Length: 107
Image (cartoon, rainbow, N blue to C red; front, side, top):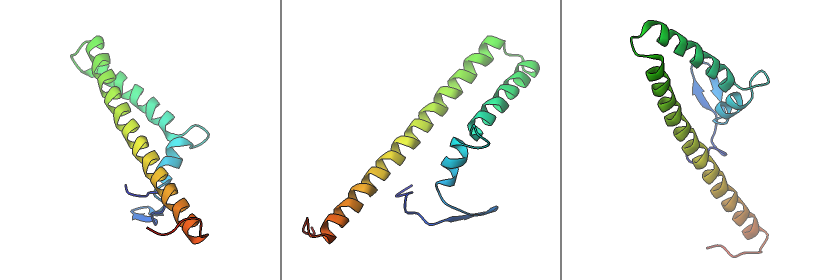
């Protein structure tokens, strides 16, 4: 995911998109972000699981919470890496700017 800030558009089945597109649609889609829709769908799926599985509601809730905790850890790592990469990008950009203005010498 190196330097998502400067990456060119990527081609997928639906067309060409900026790597930032994922963040935009997940953060704000129809006023709330698709994560709100994902959450609602997950709750509906849990209702179906409880209806058709033999595990107790308590066990299903335990497994769902475990899965959600793992999802949170993955999301936190993703955004920490995005933040770090953008910070590195901005430091390099500022350094190049200072070099071009003669404030710093290259090296």
